[in-house]
Length: 295
Image (tube, rainbow, N blue to C red; front, side, top):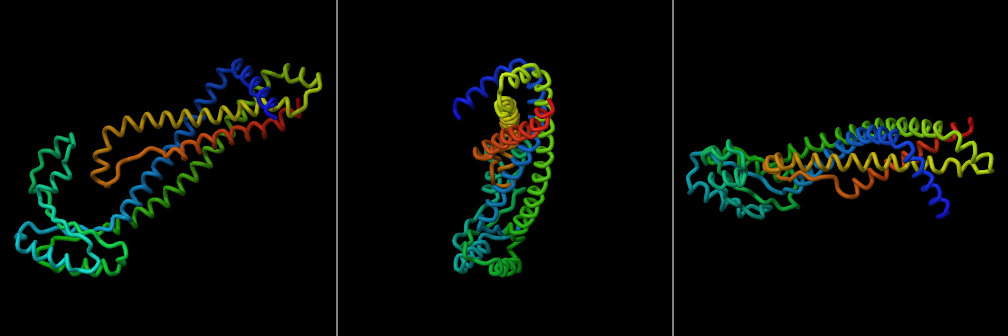
């Protein structure tokens, strides 16, 4: 089996060198299709990271009015410390809030904002065992306090993200089917053209008694490599684009969402390349079943 595979790989290498222009054009077409699919997967993974971060946030923000006195803030903080389910209460002043938002950002517009532009707040760490009903009850009581401007539990954003995740998964599935059709079409067309160019070689192999599997194997290997190469090139290009964009948007995304943007995990990248190889090999095999039989 190993010798047969090595023989098929060697013949595929020789045939690929002879038709390298055809394979380069086909690989480019496959890469464009896989870039679309990989981009969709990248969005899905980052959305899932944001959803996971917010669902585990276990906290609430109590924003204070501008006129809240230190005594009012201290009394509210003491009351919250004694509330069951509240693990920790942290006071964030306007200057501290400004520092958390601005930080080391290079955005000149943010750096010019005064501390008064950022509301002071009490950041609450909520016990994981607290139910949404109990948290809603505490939130309603806090909203009645004169020193409190508003309360944010981030639950509504988590719910919206879940809906967005479902839509993204559906879109990724549809895009996967489109990419699958494109890969099958490109690989099948490439193999058919390669087979036509090597018709003499195929006929000679048949005359000397070569089996159909021996004749087809190098073309299947070429389709497998073509699919894998297109997917790998797509992952590499997307990785370069990600690194370029990350320099400019990482700080903003982290500030707004609390999660730094990430690239595809290793298993997703390898899975995408494996998917390309499998579809390429299958497309070649199905195409050759018809083409070789009619020669």
